[in-house]
Image (cartoon, rainbow, N blue to C red):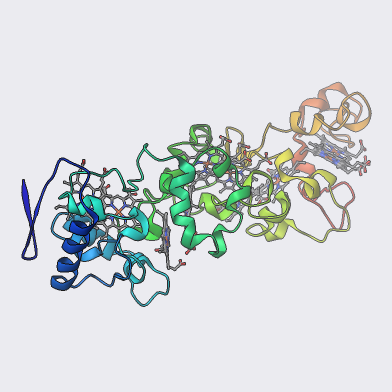
Length: 317
Ligand code: HEC
Ligand code: HEC
Ligand code: HEC
Ligand code: HEC
Ligand code: HEC
Ligand code: HEC
Ligand code: HEC
Ligand code: HEC
Ligand code: HEC
Ligand code: HEC
């Protein structure tokens, strides 16, 4: 098989033992004839991006749509070693007419997650979003950059699929939660997984983008922050005690309905909660009448400011 590149003919060889001289001679001619697309040519081991064009036109076109092909950006691959900034030295690959991919980094199963991410990190280890990568759960579970990112695409942020579907391909349990009756509107496109999580790792519990759950929630539900003269302790502590944040079959993302929710903490064996639900006489009879248990008993009918109140220590309206 012979392939034409520019005006040079390259024979495909089966043997791997090309003499270094031959390789560099071919390289030299190629560099002279083809204007490498911005790639540096100070290292003989690198073939230069221009050479890839004849056989990989599609990949060049797709790459041109992404930031990685903007020469104006310092340290971008196109200003560095071109295609080989990521794929490693392609000298052998080219001299063999595309026959061998042995020396290439192909971002396939052939390389470990660590190796694949290592290539990206040569440039991105100092990127603002990536600095906590090493402490992240994804890295520890052998997830690589290219499990979420594709390079040969003009997609926003080079994502393989848009959120939340990108994340849901692996996080099936969250997908189930999002299909429940009450859910944060992610599939509806109003909230993103990455509004709350950093997929690149961080120090927050569950890679959450805040120091605590309430701090996270206040970013969008500021009215729950208070300050309230009378605080409901579990609210300040962890919204997740009462809310299943991704989705729930109970209204308002509740982990369970009132009164069970309330009774999980408030002793049902004593006082007001286990007896009459109203302290007033009503058409059900006197305040102590048994029938009144079944009347207006929704805890939230009266304790409407369950997240805290500045007027009522009992959070009543
Ligand atoms: C003469 C044609 C030719 C040239 C020039 C060429 N390639 Fe290839 N390349 C091929 C062929 C054919 C394959 C498929 C080989 C295979 O699957 O075993 C391939 C495979 C690859 C793969 C691996 C794909 C995979 O998933 O296994 C990468 C990466 C690659 N080439 C990068 C480059 C780069 C970078 C350059 C330029 C420096 C380049 N190639 C130049 C023909 C070429
Ligand atoms: C920023 C890193 C990066 C650069 C630069 C880059 N690639 Fe890739 N390339 C990848 C990754 C990662 C994959 C695996 C598939 C994917 O994620 O899109 C890949 C896949 C490929 C493949 C396999 C076929 C495919 O599309 O999946 C070929 C061939 C290839 N690249 C050629 C090239 C050529 C030619 C250039 C230069 C024009 C280039 N690559 C520049 C990262 C890069
Ligand atoms: C040779 C250096 C270099 C390599 C290698 C490299 N990148 Fe980049 N990348 C850049 C630069 C420069 C930018 C643009 C500025 C920035 O975001 O830092 C960028 C931008 C990005 C962006 C943002 C794109 C956007 O549209 O917002 C993503 C995502 C990305 N790179 C992922 C990767 C992945 C995944 C790899 C490994 C397969 C990789 N990069 C390898 C230099 C590199
Ligand atoms: C679990 C999925 C996932 C993994 C793994 C992942 N990323 Fe990302 N990355 C994303 C998502 C989602 C975004 C877009 C965030 C947004 O929309 O704000 C992104 C954005 C980026 C950006 C652009 C940031 C910006 O705001 O401009 C860069 C650069 C980047 N990733 C690099 C990397 C690198 C390098 C790795 C590997 C070390 C990596 N990513 C691993 C999901 C991932
Ligand atoms: C509104 C904020 C928010 C959004 C949006 C969100 N999460 Fe979460 N997620 C959390 C919080 C808070 C926790 C921690 C719960 C805890 O403390 O146990 C969590 C926990 C997790 C966990 C750990 C397992 C578990 O259920 O506790 C995974 C996995 C997860 N989220 C994935 C996702 C994915 C995937 C998406 C997008 C489809 C997403 N999250 C969207 C807030 C959010
Ligand atoms: C390629 C598969 C894959 C993709 C895609 C993926 N994850 Fe993960 N994620 C994992 C694995 C594996 C774990 C560790 C095991 C677990 O907790 O489920 C994990 C863990 C997590 C955790 C839990 C952290 C903890 O402390 O338990 C969060 C949060 C998370 N991922 C969010 C996301 C978000 C957000 C996205 C999309 C931007 C995403 N993931 C995309 C595989 C993936
Ligand atoms: C990125 C913004 C954002 C963050 C962060 C956020 N939420 Fe939300 N939340 C929303 C949006 C948007 C809605 C839907 C509002 C609507 O449909 O009117 C919503 C709705 C809700 C609802 C009502 C759901 C229903 O079925 O009506 C509850 C409860 C809720 N959020 C709790 C929380 C908790 C708890 C946290 C912290 C773990 C949190 N939210 C973090 C944006 C956010
Ligand atoms: C003690 C249990 C409990 C805790 C803890 C809790 N909530 Fe709630 N939350 C509720 C109940 C009950 C409702 C339903 C209120 C109703 O139906 O009147 C609710 C409703 C909501 C709603 C939707 C309706 C509305 O009022 O806007 C949002 C948003 C919300 N909570 C956010 C939060 C945030 C943010 C936190 C943490 C700072 C938090 N919740 C902590 C019990 C709790
Ligand atoms: C996770 C446990 C927990 C849950 C669930 C919970 N609470 Fe509380 N609640 C508390 C704690 C702790 C206090 C403070 C008690 C104290 O100061 O003696 C409190 C205080 C109160 C008070 C103020 C009365 C007082 O003694 O100061 C009312 C009223 C109240 N809760 C109603 C409710 C209602 C209604 C629900 C259900 C929607 C509910 N709580 C769910 C833990 C909980
Ligand atoms: C008809 C209105 C009403 C209903 C329904 C109601 N409460 Fe109350 N609750 C009050 C009032 C008013 C107070 C404060 C007066 C007092 O101290 O008795 C109070 C006080 C409390 C207190 C403070 C300590 C105590 O026992 O006095 C708790 C805890 C409480 N309610 C929980 C609940 C729970 C849980 C439910 C649902 C099972 C519920 N309440 C239903 C009106 C109501």
